Image (cartoon, rainbow, N blue to C red; front, side):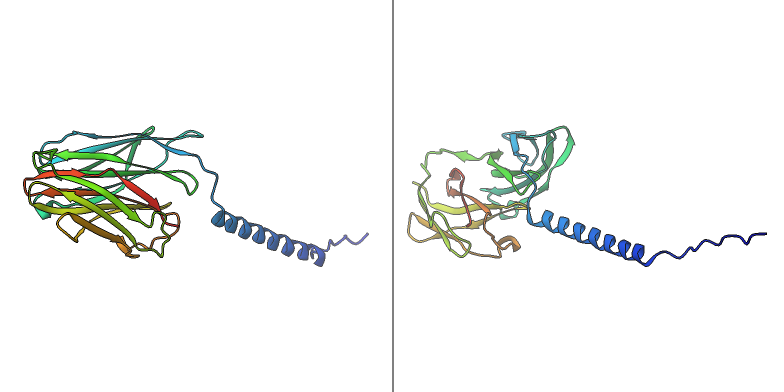
Length: 263
């Protein structure tokens, strides 16, 4: 009787080495892929803000505002995420001053919503919304201001903000930006504020600051605090601001939004 054939189950050394080389190669490829994704932004999908609205607008005292934003991608389907930030001004009671916001709810389709407030009589609410693309790009809408209750605009005192000037025009993150404005009124002057917001590829911040009065009609403010909002400016950050004034007759005035990019 022939002896049974015994098969050698020991793997060849060459096969074992090949497996080790293959595993190392896979690890290297994964590492390079992750590093590339971190360093190179994905292709932009061109985020768009179609509309921004508030209800009610204008609003009665102590209203809660329902904000709705319609956003879409210029290329591709779907709707980009939207962040909202708001800042109030003019309300006589300092405790009514408020700011806030965050990521808006996304109930359906391209519609984003958030409820903010309530806000007391005499408040103006500045609303800034930002839609983010799939890359490191974003688009801003800062046009909406909602009046709550009795916000007097264009009253008999003739309150007016003119000669708004900024230096330097194209600042670097090391620069101190100085903003000057002339504010005149037939009534005694109250507070003059600068409402300001920043936007970058990951976040939005907003606040207000009293301007310094340097003469009877001249006011100035500086933007140089690198830790404003607990945030350090970096190149590419968009900075938005507007001036708001109120005199002792309760007449109010507000400029259009100015903006610049830190370089």
